[in-house]
Length: 198
Image 1 (cartoon, rainbow, N blue to C red):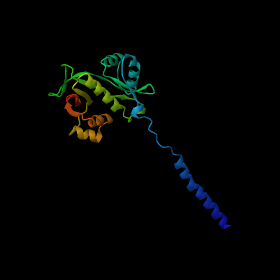
Image 2: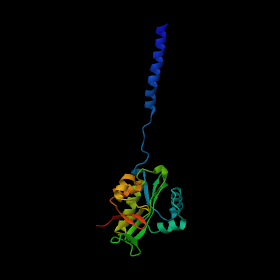
Image 3: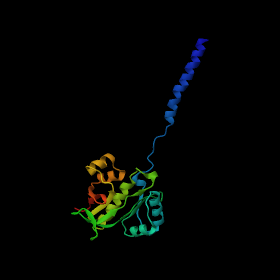
Image 4: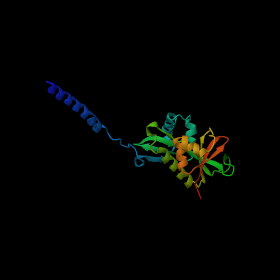
């Protein structure tokens, strides 16, 4: 009688021990759903206006159609598409940068100003910002602009800006740091600058 009970207990224990192994086997491996080869990049034009404005508003940008169309018409803005759906927007426009004063001026255009990219949350962390950054820098080089500039933050950190970005910076700030941008404190916040020509 005791032996039968022991066998029954042992059988139950074996089933319980086998169940976690089966559950482990059923776990699916993570498949990277997106790589740069699957992303189509396109220079934006007026026909993209409605989709661009939708993406930007979904990403908490307060923009109007007239502002966006004016920027798109400069020919320095790009969109990333997956399966013909716009998933990220990088707007850019001509600017004037004075490297001695380290400020934006009203002189002749010698730089591209890059607005923060608007990327749908579902595609965050998949290299879309990097793609948009490179495309806009390339367009600026083709236009013979010497600099790429962007304001990162109105909040000016104490101490080294680079150290702050390494420790607590956003994905975008870390991207600029990794792409050899320099950072300067200005009265409007932290300005990131990259020289595009030698």
